[in-house]
Image (cartoon, rainbow, N blue to C red):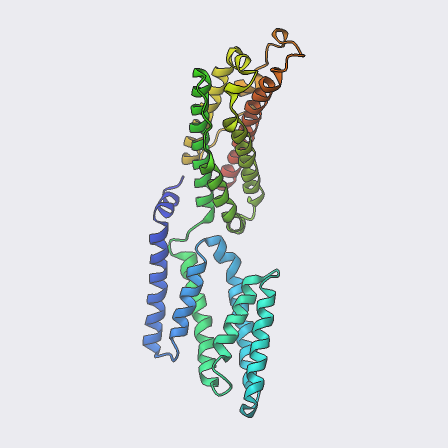
Length: 346
């Protein structure tokens, strides 16, 4: 992982605060130097944008919606001032109708833009038909402050969702390694205890929440990132089935323990997980071919087991889970290798 990526992940909150500090300092300076009226609206806009958009991908996806929504809301809000002041009631009726309509569209394709329209209309025209001067300055302040906030988010220690996403992949691989080692030790001593893998589930949840941002940061590789996530989910499913099953209560327990080469193959796979975690840190992934994994070349001695033996159900089920984890692991190494190759070639 690159030095800046490590730095940005480690000090994520501090850098967010610093970006907000710089943006507010710039805006306060501009307000004071040019003595702008209603400058508080510029400050409110900055806090609203930077408080809700942390990652670069979020900034890129919402910047256009924010500016478009601000312009559209300002046009609608200012147009209300064409209504004569004697029709004060009509001003407020149209205001409420416009805001409610915008809220309705927050459940559509561009929810953030619709929300910004509603907010901007209220900011611009919420003071009533007699408040045109304030409306004009609120519109100006909201617009230029939005640009300052977006620029600060983009260029001052930007937070990349992709860095956090791949950091979670690194954590996921390390935990898989630890859980797999632990499981192998339990099988070896025939003292099995179910292993809680909720931390793996929590990592996948966090990655899922980051996906919309990562897709905007890496347009060319968004399909790769999606496939990485899907492969992790497959590994999680197989791990969950393996680690939650009481294999010491299964009829095939003895066959599992007695199978030649199985323990060595499982430990080799666990070591592969550990090696991959190190490679992710260095951003240099060596793809692992299926034939390089002992588990995928390991075949059970079928001649020693009769097909009618019911213990074969759990026996072959256990082998299938291990082989499927190995197959998905190989797939994950190829996906990560392709992603980092693309990253280095930019």
